[in-house]
Length: 65
Image (cartoon, rainbow, N blue to C red; front, side, top):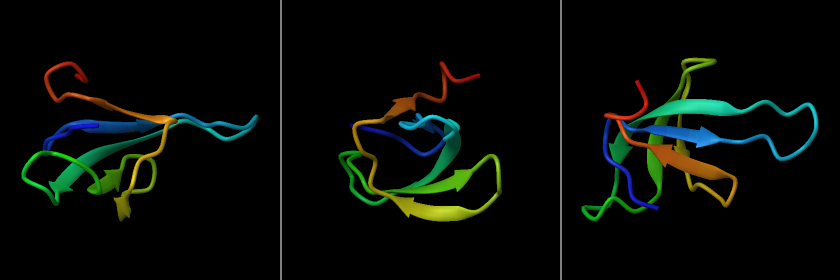
């Protein structure tokens, strides 16, 4: 998974009743764009460090709008 600042991280709910989460990537810690990412979640406004799993994907800034 490769991402850039401004891309969106989408994490699908993997269990019934767990909603999809979307966050904006505000920091990339490796020059090649590999995880982990600093993410600001759109639903709460909170920021966290994320090591995305198989249920996550990146939408580039140009396609997520």
